[in-house]
Length: 167
Image (cartoon, rainbow, N blue to C red; front, side):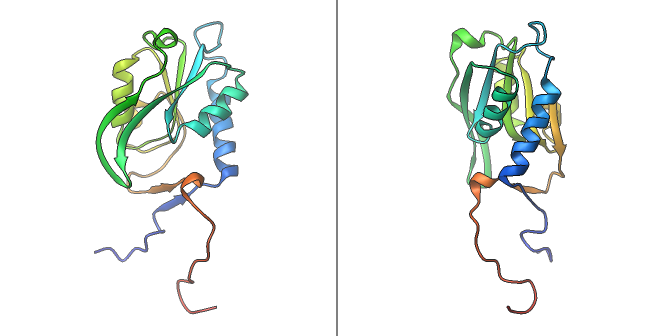
């Protein structure tokens, strides 16, 4: 048993922070596409990649946006990655000129599966853990493997009891 409190290895991300970090990712990707620096489309890995993909599409003026739905978690337990919904085949091809965006690469299972489908796509995540880093081409922030990231779409503001004492 650990003496650590549940929130001590947690990395809490606010809406402002995900917006800033997603814009930073867009800037890092700007001009790197194969079509005179432009990208043909953005594909969000749902659900976590949707907010960053929306921001990146806006920042890079990419009008073609699609999704790929991959399930690899059941609450906080990882399982085998499975594609539930694929993007438009006419858009995707082998992935050339496509940005595939997710919020986080953790173990890399999800990105590995998607990379097998679209080997020439550019894979970008806002956050990365060491085990998944080989599967991502571009990211903004690395966190330790044992850190749990709390995204704003998973959280609600509420009172928290003080660690020591009472109010």
